[in-house]
Length: 129
Image (cartoon, rainbow, N blue to C red; front, side, top):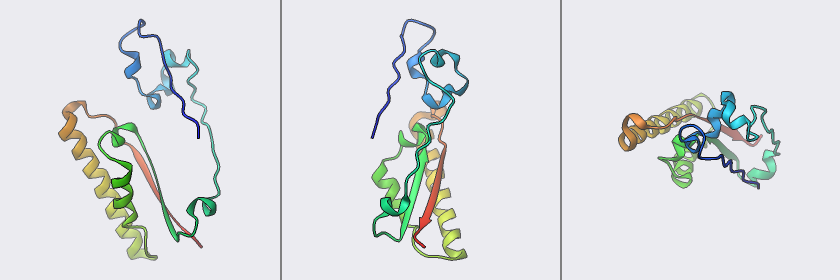
C-alpha cells in the first residue's frame, strides 16, 4: 500500500494547502508539483479480497464524507444491506445507501454549515457467483 502526500510552497497564492487533490483536475497550480489528471488504475481479483464472504461492499468517497463518517460505522451500515438477492434486495440496498448519503450530508451541514465540504461517493455491492 502506498500513500502520497502533496506538499506545495505556502508562500504562493492563497492557502494552496487547503485545496483537495480531487479538485486539481483543472488546477494548474498543483500540476506544477506533479499532480495530474491521468488516473492511476489498479486491478484486483475480488475473489481473493472477499475470502470466503458471499457478499462485499465497496465505498469510494470524497474527503467530505470521511470528515463526518468513520470506516467502521460506514461498513456496519452499508453491509447491513449486503445480503439477499433479487429485486427486493436491490431496492433495500438503494434505500440504505441513499439514507447513508443523506445522513452524511446532514452531518456535514450540522458540523460545518455552509462550509461543508464536497460529499461525493460511489457504493457498489458484489456477490460471489
